Image (cartoon, rainbow, N blue to C red):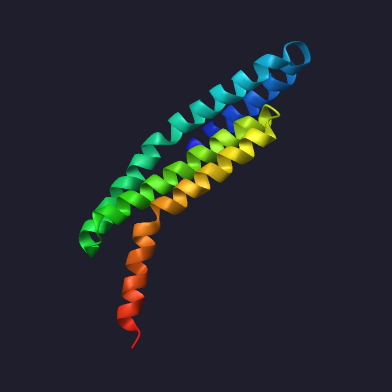
Length: 128
């Protein structure tokens, strides 16, 4: 089970960070980053499976692939942003974390404009 591996990596990393922080606190952030990357690598094949499933559903329902691509990019940005924000907060840099968070939200909003525009056009066609 992958969840057990993920939890194991997280808990082992936590224990190592607690021990390392006593002697060399500057190395704790590196262990946190390595643990995060390992967890991301573990879930990559799951993500590719999800993407393939969404693409097959998109082909069956004749959804525009451009919109699916935008949604996947937005989801990727949100996940990577959460990862970066967590690392910044772990390092004690809340100010940088909030700037990354705000910047990514603006990018996500700007990327979603074509979808919002299409939805508004559909709504206007339905309304008398």
